[in-house]
Image (cartoon, rainbow, N blue to C red; front, top):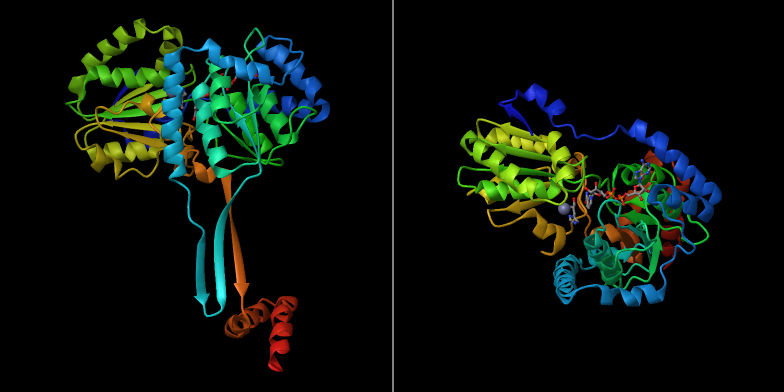
Length: 429
Ligand SMILES: NC(=O)c1ccc[n+]([C@@H]2O[C@H](COP(=O)([O-])OP(=O)(O)OC[C@H]3O[C@@H](n4cnc5c(N)ncnc54)[C@H](O)[C@@H]3O)[C@@H](O)[C@H]2O)c1
Ligand SMILES: N[C@H](CO)Cc1c[nH]c[nH+]1
Ligand SMILES: [Zn+2]
């Protein structure tokens, strides 16, 4: 990790850039994939699966027998853990349901708002370097609670042409039946434009690598809505002098092991902690099966030592991390000053991986600074809010003259007439 002592504010923007490939460069790879799917549908999808996932698929649709058979490949402990996670995620997302709203803005003028499920949604489950079955829960549970009518799930197959049984088990537990073995930009394009096997959806959800994220952004220009840019994982840890270096190291490494293009950042105003932290990172890294990935990620990662808590808050807001962990006594107080972050973890005993798997919050979160304006996935992501209005005769008498006045001032005579004809019809009553 590169160390920066009191970097001046002018250098922050450059310092805090993520190690991503430029959108312009990645577009030259992803756009031809999207174009091929639009033109050749399933044929192109099968060809890209052969090229990128190294497998020739006869049937990309997961069969009912495969879904039903998944459970027997999992241990009782893992099934139990998935059930606990399912329960917590469902509980937190059900609590996000909002009641329909009805307001009489003036006598006889009734305005309402009701949330309605997005009918057709596509869920992307990453599977390139690890089969993220936890993402199935994070997307399928809110989609089901919202009441989405058609749910399609895509994930890249392994070399044997299968999806990991835990992906299928989590899907079955969440009530998902249409599962397709397809990944990368080609799966995103297939859900955006439709192919012979994959129905076109209204909105695509889910995290993924830079190719997947760029594809989501490109298809959102003309075909579908997307949740947000949820690319390579990142975490920023802020710690005080009482934080255990082993906890800090473990939290940093937990996101570093996701991928070489992930980024982890450590911020503190107490540099005495650093030598113990370096030792902990080294010791823990050696024990990780994915140590090479984590090690390469650490090369893109930062340690930043600042003078004051206020400065740390400003830097965190400038970085807008996907995950933000406060390992400090005044975690709540610090968190209250944060404007830009995907999800915040408070206190010494709140590891980020609890949110990744099972506490109840959603782990599909904005990356690469998108947390400045986007929220993570929630129940809201799967609904639209439709507004309604109903105006009585009295209401039109109250409101109509004001509408006529405004329409005339905008020189929109037909708008005015829509009120006038009705008011005239009431004159004889
Ligand atoms: N932000 C979030 O909420 C969040 C949550 C979970 C995971 N993630 C991130 O998701 C990512 C998962 O990435 P992954 O790679 O393991 O799985 P993935 O499923 O996103 O991508 C795998 C696919 O990428 C495509 N691909 C790979 N190399 C390519 C190339 N050179 N050209 C074109 N396409 C190519 C292939 O089609 C392959 O099937 C990680 O970066 C992880 O950090 C983010
Ligand atoms: N940390 C990821 C979000 O950036 C989510 C995840 C899934 N499995 C493990 N971690
Ligand atoms: Zn993670």
